[in-house]
Length: 274
Image (cartoon, rainbow, N blue to C red; front, top):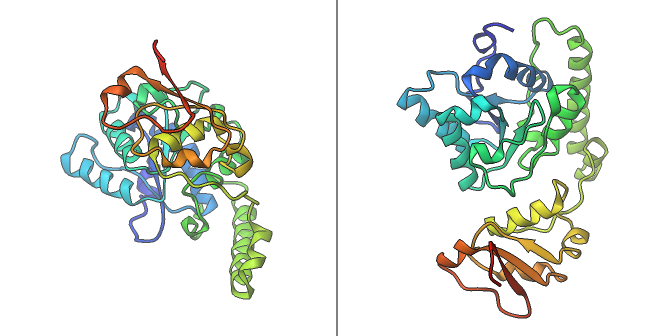
């Protein structure tokens, strides 16, 4: 849709919302994602001002930092857009939840500057609306609070049914919440309890071991080798991995501040040495 940014401006309120990051050159393609989010009822903010403007860059950074979840439309244009790249890397450094939307199956995480261990949920050529919805709803950082009123998108033949269905679902969710929290699970996908990790380096390594799945007790109990991208701030969380025997570190990590883990854990260096 042409001029969709004027018809559907970014959300400017204070309630929970998503930050949709995409390069200006991908605006027309990004509309396919935006349309699904709007019809689903998601509150979405995106950069709409001139990307080279200093005030606009600061505004994007502020809105990105306040968002519950960042969606990144990961293309060659996004990797080449210095403003998009800057915001994404700042979000990653601050531990924000990032979901990479991959339209063509190419893994551009390293080109964007993201850590190799960031979980990746590719959406190949946007061929399935259900696949996109599931990826967003199951992403870390997503919650029902992000959902507001579904937007009536022009030219959507199935909008009437979708809107009605979503309104019924919203009423049922509100009723379940009023009656008792235990009924809420009827309308939400069942998600297993996850083992919490706070150190960003260890968390990224465990997520990589999970291959995009949930970090459950069963998963962490099976991890024997943990491949780290750098020196963690603390090794205490290794106690949550009872089967762990080996940790791998890049050689340059030894130049960083920190000590090696205690106990019987073997430390192997990538690029030679042990």
